[in-house]
Amino acid sequence: MLEKVLLLLCLSSALAQQLCVPDASDGYKVRLSIKTALGDKAYDWDDNEMFLFRSILAFAMRSHFKGQEFNVSNIIVCDVTPRVSFWFVVMSPDNPSVLIDKGEVEQAVRQSRFRINSAFLLTDQTLEFLGIPPTLAAPYDPATPPWLIVFGVVIGIVGAGIIALLVSSVVQKKRKKNEKTEDDAVYEEAQVNTMENGTLHVSQIGVYNISFSDDERLTQM
Image 1: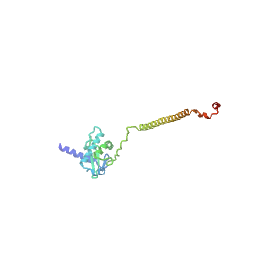
Image 2: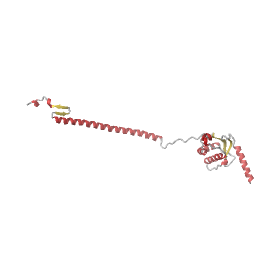
Image 3: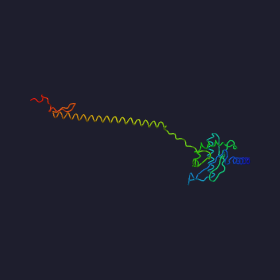
């Protein structure tokens, strides 16, 4: 029994190596630039990091194919280079001899791209899936619609104009009232002077001095 299990494992490994080759029709090449991204804090790429990659990719496949249990063994890696690049293919969990279609793998990677990048502290530019374009940031959706902002600005300008007109009208009325008050004060002062002198009369046409009148009634003894 044990010999059969070992034989199946060897056959599966040999089959996997045959399925994963450079430029495979359903495979993708991955290229990492760890030193470029992290500088002095760069970590070494080893078997543990590769295990993490296969695990996170199995997670991405599970998230994309609901109900299918992808495992690390379903992620086959080959042609690993020291400059941290490699090829991978994804085997079907139901049939190890069948590879998952390249388009489905791309959708799974794009769907979980943020989680994949975060696991290795990298970005779309430093963790490249060659053939899969970088994910675009979601368009900014403001909490307040732009038309509402424009409407508020217009209403604010109109309101400021109305307030300015009201203030200007009040100031003009107050100014006219002050001018009228000054004119009344001058008129009252002229009347007071006339009453004190006894010889001046104020009329609507000005001041009339009776001392120079030619009226005979005023000159008779």
